[in-house]
Length: 493
Image (tube, rainbow, N blue to C red):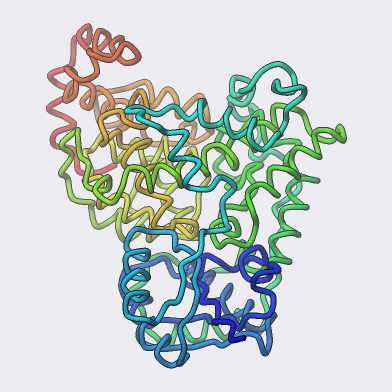
């Protein structure tokens, strides 16, 4: 009996994808498409991670792997010479492409994706006829469905969500959390060759090359997970939302890349955190907060990407049309004065990564206030972040960060002035701008920008009971006209 080869995309690299009982004896096809590499202006380190992951897997599989470097995927599949099977890819465009290949006879079968915990059909059943979505509802259903941090049908500790315990500002007077650093994988000759090949291809990349911080093999991913659970998860919860200039990873896991490359299964990751809690090694707030990220938010974003459909990326309910500035697109952090925004852009430039608070409350908050075009912003996050894949960014950016879907995903926009940044970081103490000031040469662009944004969207905000107070406060500002004039002319941040 002929067994069709299994074609893997670059985000399907884990053993739960290619080495299950169903696939154990299949030939595995991996393809480097030069057209795909040239298609967008990706971060240099993102391309390195993707190519390194595919090449490492080919080396591990040995004779099982057929590794093809061609201009297009179609050319590669024609060279295989027989139809392949493939797991459902992780974007609308890729799925449509695979379906066309199936009609042409190059793909024999499209299998369900094995890289997420909840099947898409079960999410569709959960979603039903909902017109608005709350992550908390989905998260609770996930905990029940997979029996994670549950006891007798109820959440361990009696509460579903301990987020209120995970909002501590950074330790006063400390430059770092003072905890064990993240596990960093050693580079090898495959990484060296990837780096040389990327140099030779002369691709239109952004960001700097640099040492590899993220796991790209299943073994590396397991090591990174074990190291995080043992050394960093105990410190994760309290300062989950805090920022320190000299501590870019804080207590975060750095597992988004191996998760999004399909090297780790999210349920396995959640179980490790749960086991550490039951062993008494991790406080419930830290374990629950991490599980909420992996089994709650990440799965939620995946399913809503499919549920909302491809047109969601075009949503722009706040009518934001400002093009992304060149300094933003080019990650030119050195031209930025605001210490917090400069630090966030430096993180993207130097590593292709920042944790979720700089993404949401610095980069996203700035873009929201300045009215950057949401689709262009989503594309920028996808291309500039090493963990930014097609399915990841639309709901995170269009919905959560920019409120461009009009509240379909989030109940309020995530906008704030400098006071929040001052409370949750150490950036403001050495910044040329003063977070308390909204007018003048040293007025914080986040503080002043916030009031200009509130004024611009005052009708929408006044109609939302979660944001109506901001409009009332704005109307009491005696210098509002001067602030609006100042911010309309602002060119430097």
